[in-house]
Image 1: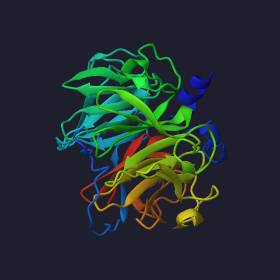
Image 2 (image 1 turned 180 degrees about the vertical axis):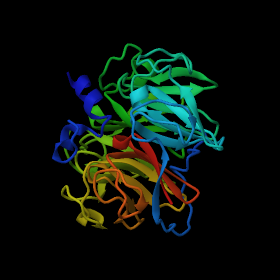
Image 3 (image 1 turned 135 degrees about the horizontal axis):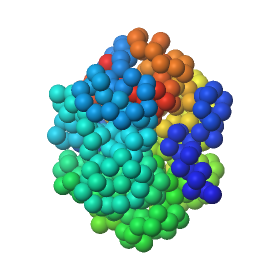
Image 4 (image 1 turned 30 degrees about the vertical axis):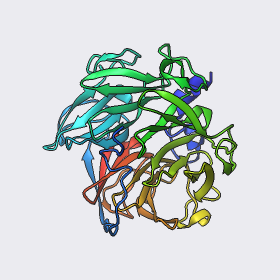
Length: 364
């Protein structure tokens, strides 16, 4: 029963709280810049525009002006200059070439749990992805509750049950168990870090597939020593240059930090709401996707407020784009999103998976 809950709720930003307004019940750093921190001023964003999709729930490849997406959920940049995104409704991972041609990268389009050649493999629900500088992709398959790897056109399982068994077990490779992993990032040590949402924990996965829990205990909210701290459906995460992990704690409506010393603290977010501010005076609602700009600024999707927000190194939260639920391009603070999820920074642009609108949007 709990696996069914995760499948239906986690992928759509854990719709258990959407009732309020939605109308719908290795080599170190990532090639998409998600975990790279350099010092430079934030760009000034002025406009939101449509990048891919027309609102229809359809998997259609081709030039950007005709391509369509079916519930895009996460997005990453590869070392080849391609943009990769997860198409949850199409059970595929797709790619966009530098010249704007959309095609399938992995997944046959049939829901399933079979490894093999990328375009013949079956994917359950491709929730999140990360791409290394070597071009290796790792994926959270939330339905299969496993971490999968795509290298040289072949899909394999790095960690998690081959029989789609859910659980909460540290271990090596196929002996480890997850329950609905939803977010994935690479750390400076080359290890993967995963939000195991259904178990309310953060786990580390080495390149050899060794899984260990590094933070979280039971569902709830508590700061403190990492293995005693509590999260409530953590969704995504980034790893800072110093090894600090920043987590979107979805149903606690906060952004949390895990220090290299193993202490969990609240970075931003107090009571659920919609307000910019410093640290815990800021109010957010069901944060999901999170990314790190080259200058160290953190951007995240405040999904139930249908906004994109940023956090300065000092913890100041400000709204970058979005106003209310819907679809509208134009000036950033008038534009509208519906359930924004994964996002990534590239060349002073932010690409956003506008999940509820079946589109990828661009903030520039």
